[in-house]
Length: 270
Image 1 (spheres, rainbow, N blue to C red):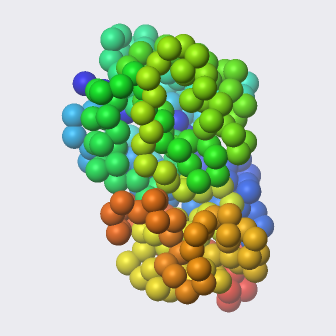
Image 2: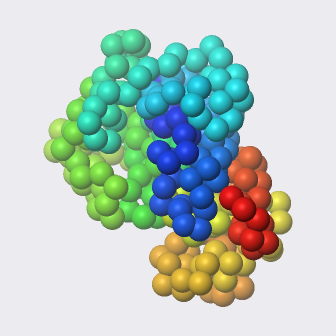
């Protein structure tokens, strides 16, 4: 049985999603992060035939939506993240899972793609049975998922530059240098900046017509073009390859982003 590893940071104001600020406040950004994590946990729970594990950085007791998050991981194995940077923490999390679940393949995701559905994860688990590794590329050049038959190969992540436009390419190269066959998963958009949050919220909202490209651009046409490649003004603000299902998960996330968007429009104190 595949271990489904979620890498997450406790959504404490001032420590998560700080690139959403401004326009969001640190509290609003943390609430958005909490909603994204809750949606991701829901998706993992709804994925059949996997063992869920959470690698956590920080204390949920200090987080926004602490009670709901604590209830959502009831029965999960919780591992503390170890390492001084993201590459080290990822490599160590895979190694810790390898120790706890010897011989089991691992599919690892984060909390930046709340639009994920059980179908996405089930497909990734299946593809992992056919290859040594799978990697889900992100629109920004990073990746949203990494699956490994032998999670100890994740040691290469300690040498890969993280959070760059070439992280995905370097990750694939590092894995192939180990002689691994790497299969690609569908391209998805992750949430880093405010325009990303609006675009992903639009992709999961039941009222996508209310999230125009102009709104997602947030006054920055260049940013909109980067977030929405190939989309023209007036079209749905969703990357075409990032929407295998019209409306997947991400309900809490979409509602939280919409609430912050309304407060910004109305000038409500944050």
